[in-house]
Image 1 (cartoon, rainbow, N blue to C red):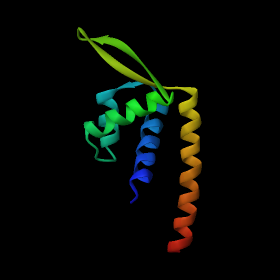
Image 2: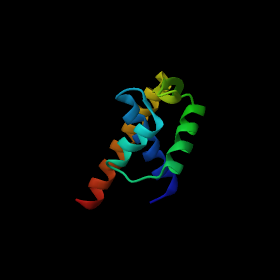
Image 3: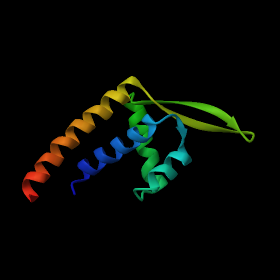
Length: 100
């Protein structure tokens, strides 16, 4: 599978998980790994890229004497997620045509 396509799917998956609500990095990693095996070294560059694209924002919350970095979907993130959804529907339609 083309690397750019995979990259877009991972971005979409991260945005979809964050659509459920704010969460911190390790919890996000665990939630994604329930369905798709990725490494933490794969997840954190995705988070940085999405933050740079203004698709998500971060804030810190103290937990057990340490700060946890939480991620929150922005308006731009919701828009990007809808774009990915539209694109995936198009790809699914083409795949269904090819393999039906």
